[in-house]
Length: 495
Image (cartoon, rainbow, N blue to C red; front, side, top):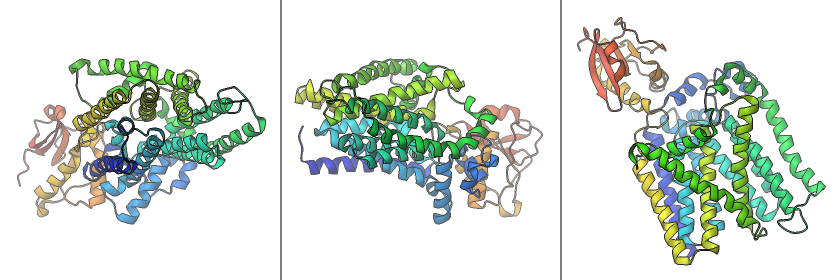
């Protein structure tokens, strides 16, 4: 359906503003989470530059370098709060939105196909979660999308600065999260394979030009050497902790099943069979989306959108291959959950390019619009149904930690402060964060313990509901919170 280009731009811009508002609201209102708080507690006074050689920065993989450096800047400039801690990732979301809009607008002139493309790339509730958290995953996703856009610009105009920008953005994505090393390796392989089909006697024919290959491969070689120098010791430290072996899955199929399960974000469209059904649907969709890249490219390889489609498919396939090689050669696990966010972005791009290709070549205009509108509506519906403004799926248990602290702060009389507060181990980092950030005086700093202490040593105890039976002799429930957490009060304490 052809519409005024200005209207399309305004409508798409409004749509993405609404998406940005969703992540911004979550960033400002959600309780801090376990991993965010741990980062702050450990690294708020750390000079990030020393982390390239200091073992003190690498007790585990919680330190996402670019993210740590970013929130250190924003909190020092604007003060410590949930929003300022998460601001770097919100900026990464803005980058992601603008880059995805640029890709869609350059490829699809039809309104509904463009609308479907934006929805498929942007409206995944699990992906959106990480743009509203102070972790490196959102930063890495935003920088990777910017890198993909720069790659597409290089394919369009063959200018070296665009290729250099693509690699530099990929390097920044690695500094945001080491998982992006997979993307950097896949980008290098994608550029090389595409160059073979761009340097022949005519587009789509194999060719090899030594001078161009030298320049093209010098860029990633130099950057990878610099990364190796910077990251050798951090990766060595993390390998020594066994952190690389602790996360992920041992199954290739389970890796992509986790992509589906997390993208569903708890929505149960088919009751207990929801994940199974959608894993089958995803497989049915992704196979032709990958095959379609080669089908369309070799029929008119000179067209730029077909080159971009093939580049996306190669990024997806090579990322899968790199992940598999790492598993079999290095013994590392397959990427899973938040470490597999790249596959969500690439899947959205693949589905968009397939839809555009079918709409351009095989579907009648009205049928193309109806099909694209259906995908767009379904994506919007799923986000509206599965999205939430209350908690993070990854760290759901911290949903009420801030509320618990606010409750204690208003309940404990000043003359009785400070009280002894005990917390289950999962709540300790965020409780400590708020005590520092808000300078809370009504309770003493909670220490970390993996055990539940039943001897009544604390005045209050914040635990999971499942742990209450262990404490009933000494404690009674002061306040229950939705989500399965409760604040207990020692039985002999009366205010």
